Amino acid sequence: MELLVVGSVAYDSVETAAGKRDDMLGGSATHFSLAAALFAKPGLVAVIGNDFREEDTTLLREHGVELSGLTTANGPTFRWGGRYHEDMNGRDTLFTQLNVFESFQPRLEPIHQDASLVFLANIHPGLQQQVLDQVKSPGFVALDTMNLWIDIAKEDLTRVLQSVDGLFINDEEIRQLTGRRALVKAATDVQQLGVELVVVKRGEHGAIVFHGEDRFYVPAFPVDEVVDPTGAGDSFAGGFMGYLHQAGDVSNTTIRRAAVVGTIVASFCVEDFGTDRVSTLGMNEVRERYEAFEELVRFEPLKL
Amino acid sequence: MELLVVGSVAYDSVETAAGKRDDMLGGSATHFSLAAALFAKPGLVAVIGNDFREEDTTLLREHGVELSGLTTANGPTFRWGGRYHEDMNGRDTLFTQLNVFESFQPRLEPIHQDASLVFLANIHPGLQQQVLDQVKSPGFVALDTMNLWIDIAKEDLTRVLQSVDGLFINDEEIRQLTGRRALVKAATDVQQLGVELVVVKRGEHGAIVFHGEDRFYVPAFPVDEVVDPTGAGDSFAGGFMGYLHQAGDVSNTTIRRAAVVGTIVASFCVEDFGTDRVSTLGMNEVRERYEAFEELVRFEPLKL
Image (cartoon, rainbow over all chains, first blue to last red; front, side, top):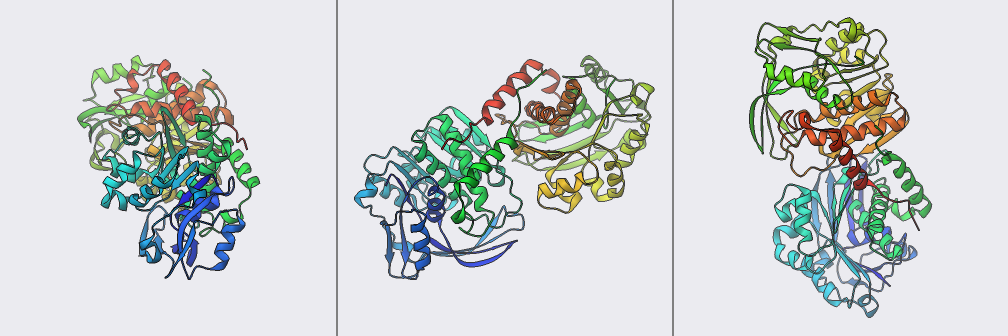
């Protein structure tokens, strides 16, 4: 076990312009794991309730997700409900039931303590720190966060940022975190905390990757129809970190490829509800779409 | 004279987060001409009032803009005033004084009737049609438009679209024009009118170029500070059409390069108020930034 993710496993109820689904398998660590499982056998540290469906455990296991860190607590699984706006860019949270997640205290097995790549998905930065403190000598640690933690736990978040190598964050969140409107300045502020890699996600507009001095702009892959945006960011991160794991280095070239892989996996994610698309995704499809994407953004040197 | 633009020459009063300027040289045809003048000697067809400043005529002439189609009418020059929102994405129009523009009836000189490349900048589609009817056998005609004409003159706009080769339009406008939310579907609808090239401008998020079957995604070039977004779209189109003129063909390769050139010229435009930056812009700067842009979006084939 070399790639570890800690985060939420949830049941999501989602309404979009394309339809409505209740109690789908979801959660940040779920979406991350299934995407990363294209390239690695990620270890998943999370808590589920005793209502968690056997078929969902099976699905994760059959994708090669290592489940010794998935603990079952007494009570219902974390549930989230949301409704997306017509344009799929905004959403309203309808309910958040933390349930067993409320008292989640991640404790790592020895196998997880030796992880070399770690992704701290979107949970309270205090919990992220607690996980990080248990990993012995990680090669590369990245985290995701959200506006809620910037609001209520900014100090904790700033502290954990000082010990990680990468941050995945969306444009509005990094503006909120740094108080800077210009993304380049905001990312530079975060890098000055010691975070080498800052990935600013911009939804349908793609992502900007700041890695040391290197800057990389990647548009989103255009899909015919966005069915459900839930999990896009975690699928992006899962594809990204999974690819890093497989490549075995963090050169600029690898980081850029990883960002494109993340873009591609996220583009599949949004084409169906929940995990439906990524859980049937094959590497050939990723490779084909990567090539289509190369063609979509390619241009020749200037000839005058 | 082979590249012709018809549109507005105006005095703009603009407020942005970076400051406030009154009565700056502006207008769609002005911004287009100065950008296109990097590559060609564009002919400008427009009307100005008798208050038009000698120094502004001089500026255009010294940039190689051909002014025999710039007529002076009795009355004040077209004036527009606007205030940009803090984030520079939205703006409020404070006033629009059509003045001499109200009775503008473009009549082309023989030299303009022979134009091979024509850009119909953002004016009433009826006027665009009137210009087009006077050009003998243009090789390539493109037009720009705005929400106002889609609201009040959609029939005229649809008619003129049926006789042009290219449309430059922003994302919200093409959605309004076609009633389609998905940009790919919206662009396909416009192409079915016979418009081979559809360039969907997305402001700080770049542009999508649909050319026949070819699709090209180009992000915006990130500038340190946006000072004034006015004219960005027209500078984009000016760089684009100017480059087409110089290249002498409309292959996919040329169209993609033209879109990057347009992106680069627009990125300079927004770095200062009005025409201040583009009017001092040199080809070396364009070339350098084109190369920086190549580096910003480059990635290698997937290695697994």
